[in-house]
Image (cartoon, rainbow, N blue to C red; front, side, top):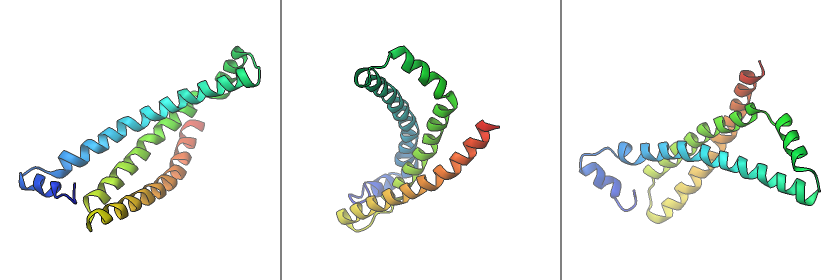
Length: 140
């Protein structure tokens, strides 16, 4: 949108591109990421159950009983809770680099690469601190 001057057109119409472009993308990412993680968790459990039953020949009730005794609710809450922060890191970083892209289509590729790298580093650092925070929150 920056390369095709759509953002300048939005500004010329007297509308804030932050309100029209950035905030909806951040909200959408904050909604979609936890839903994707919850869906991924469900498919992971079903996949592990299928492997345990069909490949290993274990009883399905035994597998579910072991899963419920081993995996606790705090494990799911921690995983889904982190996704809100990760979604925020990804969306804000991507919007920042997208709004400040320069150099035409080649600049879009460079901005995309930078957004991915910065988002990955922010997630790595954020994951460290969030793991510590959730550990102290749930273990005490």
